[in-house]
Image (cartoon, rainbow, N blue to C red; front, side, top):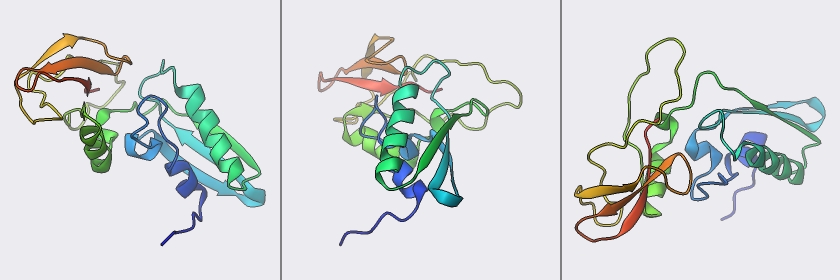
Length: 168
């Protein structure tokens, strides 16, 4: 059974992240707000994973393209840097999708301290489970993977390399 997309949020929530295409912007937690106005106008607010995110322009273009194709007449994409995005905003479904794609998801960090939050790509957890075999016997091969948000690791048991989304 096919369910019709009925709201601008439904359309925006289906847009995939350009750097982690196994996740939608909603899964990743960067989709913050979608507001519909009279005349088919839509305003979308996103919070990038970090202020220098190179995929930010592509996210906006993909949102505009998807919403215009769905029949909305005008689309404004806004960027909000406050509060700062955290890997804790990745949905449980998003964490599952990362594991299923062979990418180790970040650990949960918990509540942030009040006040300004500097960007801090903390070193990966000492105990990162291999997304393929589940072993915690893994080692870091490179602090950076295909994007600044990921590290490259290898499992010492199954010998498979994998990426790990760093905790932010």
